Length: 225
Ligand code: NI
Ligand code: MN
Image (cartoon, rainbow, N blue to C red; front, side, top):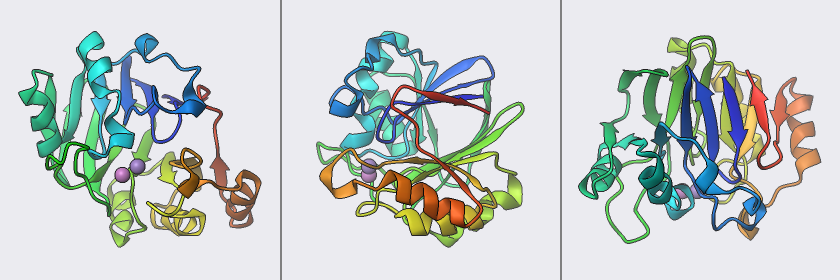
C-alpha cells in the first residue's frame, strides 16, 4: 500500500492495484500549487464529510476519471443526483471493494455542503488491504469510539488530524493512537489555514516522547507500507 499526501486532508492511496483519492482539496491550496489534479489517477474517491476543504476537487476528478464516489448515504446521493457514480455507506457498515474491505466509522464533527445541502454525519474510513490496514480519521475530535477499531482490525497506520481548532490537537491525537493501538501516525489537517498552524518539530517530539512515530509528509511525497 502506497500513501501520498496531497496537502491538508487530501490523500492518494494505491492498494490492490487500484487508485483511491481521499478528500481532495488541492487546487485552492497554495501549499499544493505543484500538484496538478488533472494528473491524479482515481478509481475511487472517498469522502469523510461534505465540508469545502474536503470536496473542492471531487467533481473535476470524478468527471475526468469516472471514479466511484464513496461516502455516507447523503453525500453519495448528492453526487449521484448530479450523475456521478457513487456508493452510499453509513456508520458501522463495511463493503468488500475490489481494492479491499472498507468500513465507514464514526467521527465527531459536522458535515454540511458549502451550498448548505445536508451532508449527513461525518465519518472516517478503515481500509483493510491485502497486506496492510489503515485508518483515516477524517475531521474529528478525540472519541471513545476509536477504541472499537482495534477490536476488529489491527492497524498498520493511523492518519489523524492534528491541527487543533476544528479537530483534535497533537495531545488528543496521542491519546487517539493509544485508543487505536497504533503507534505509527501520519498527521494531516494542519498548516493549511491560520487556525491550524502547528510546530512540526514539537509535534514530532511529543509523539516520540510517548514512544510513537508521527510522520509529516511533504506535499506530493509518499510512504510505502
Ligand atoms: Ni470539516
Ligand atoms: Mn476540514
